[in-house]
Structures are given as C-alpha cells and as structure tokens.
Amino acid sequence: MTDAGRRSEVAAALREVHGRIEAACAAAGRGADEVTLVAVTKTYPASDVVLLAGLGVTDVGENRDQEAGPKAAEVQAAGASPRWHFIGQLQRNKARSVVRYADVVESVDSVRLAEALARAAEGRSAPLEILVQVSVDGDASRGGVTGDDLWRVSDSVAAADTLQLGGVMAVAPVDWDPDRAFELVRGLSQRLVAAHPGATTISAGMSGDLEAAVRHGATHVRIGTSLLGMRNTLR
Ligand SMILES: *Cc1c(COP(=O)(O)O)cnc(C)c1O
Image (cartoon, rainbow, N blue to C red; front, side):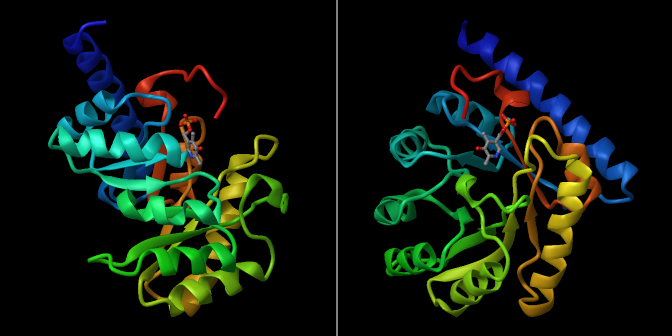
C-alpha cells in the first residue's frame, strides 16, 4: 500500500474510533475530553506511529520492550514525540531499558517491579508515571495484582520519589461480561483514590469493549485492532 493509502485508511479508522468514544461518553453523560485514546501500535511499524501522531494521536502503547525501544527511537528520529505507554508484562531486568523511552508503565503488578522501576528512573527529568495493573478474575498468570497486593504495590509506588502513582489498568477477561469487569475495576479505583487522591487514571477498554469501559469511568482506552487492523500474531 502507498503511504497516502495507509494514511487515509488509518485516518478513517481513527475518525471511527473517536466517534465511538464520543458516543460512549455522551451515553454515559461524560465529556469526550474525559477519555484519552492510547493507540496500541504493537506489531506495527514506526511509520504508523508517526502517521498517528500526525493525525493528532498523543499517546501510544506497546507491550514488548525489544520491539518498543527501537520503535521509539525511530519515531523520535522522525520528529514525532508521542507519550509512550508500556502495557505488557515486564520483567525486572527490562526496567532500565523501558524507562529510557516510556512515559507511563501501565502494567506494574509487584512491589519488586515497582522498586526496580524506581531505581531505574533515577536521573530522569520527570517522574515515571505508574499504573497498577489489577487482575479482574484473580488469575495473576496473565498479569495484575490480586487482593491486598493493590495496596502494597500502590503504597510502594507512591513512596518512591522517581515514580508517580497515576491509577489503575485492567484488561477484561475474555470470558467475563465487560460491564461486570469494568464495574469491579471502578470500585477498586475509587478505593485507591480515597487513599491516593491523585491516582485517578483508569486505563480500561480495548477495541471490543471500549463502550463498557467508558460507561464505567475509564479515563484511558487502549485501542489497537480498530485503528490499525488485525495483527498477525495473537498478542
Ligand atoms: C494489545 C493490547 C491492547 C489492544 O487490543 P485491541 O483489541 O487490538 O484493541 C490493549 N491492551 C493491552 C494490554 C494489549 O496488550
């Protein structure tokens, strides 16, 4: 496909996604400016990130360090500077690499990872924003804290000078009603905000369930497929 062809294809998809977000906000009695679109660009090239930035997308999400690091460098070299959200499972030995390009790490689910990121973020000009990933169904193998670990991890993030606690992130389990999943996430968010008033972010909702997420207070939706197309790999 030509560059112009890809551009018009992505621009049309972006209009459609913005339309869905606006409609969902209107239905929920919320302003469309209360929800930030994070364009998930995993498996797609740096040229697509540059294109999205040119179309006004401010935030992009990636889930693998070995892909995101070089892509972020390429995007920067092309003159674009979106905010990078790291949204995938992260090993502690990748913390140093991720803090070089990420503005937000959405997938923090252990005190040990929070501590590794806090150390790695020393020397940054601005604190690294952290979202604590919560597990909706209690199956921690797919990432996310369960039970009281939400409080342990969020307290550890809040105590670190180099980190800023932004809020929570969640993925609705495939076998759950998304409304039920996001209602639960909102309840956890409300309890978190009671303890940490600044931690108001709720990153929830993907291509298939953004409407339910917006209905239940999502401040950020992470959209890949509906913007850029089906990925060849399942991730
Ligand atoms: C891939 C991914 C998304 C985007 O999913 P789509 O269904 O393609 O919109 C959102 N969040 C996370 C954590 C992801 O890994």
